[in-house]
Image (cartoon, rainbow, N blue to C red; front, top):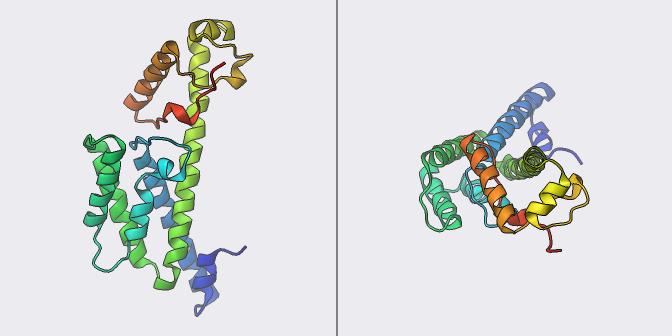
Length: 210
């Protein structure tokens, strides 16, 4: 399937001009998607099993950009409410607020520079890329969690003894909602949060009780 942005740009333009605009749009869209993904490291999803839980207020911002009379400030305000509801009313930290304001402004400016007939394709491209990056970060989180456990415990038997589990090997280890498992997970997430790295809710990777 051909890139919808490319098809739209090629209509009514020379090949060279169209390819140049396409390259710029792609590059800017990827940068904005990466900025959205960085903001999401601050977002505390209730569950990562759904697209909504993974992306938080990002789809709302993308939907609002380009609407008549809608400003980046208004869109940021709506996004803040979504974020605060996800963390039970607690206010955003400075880092989250700054990241959200910056990426919202960047996306609104990108939409303004994009031809009207290409905006839907641009929105789709950005949201799909953000989703990919968010899932990628999530996968990296669980790999890092597994590696952290292997450094913490001498072997799988030691982990099973502490957690009251019966994992056969490290490849099948998941989060387990036990007292020891929660303590380990909280310590691991705290260390990542202090380093500004992505964190994930436990229920996205929880193992069944054995």
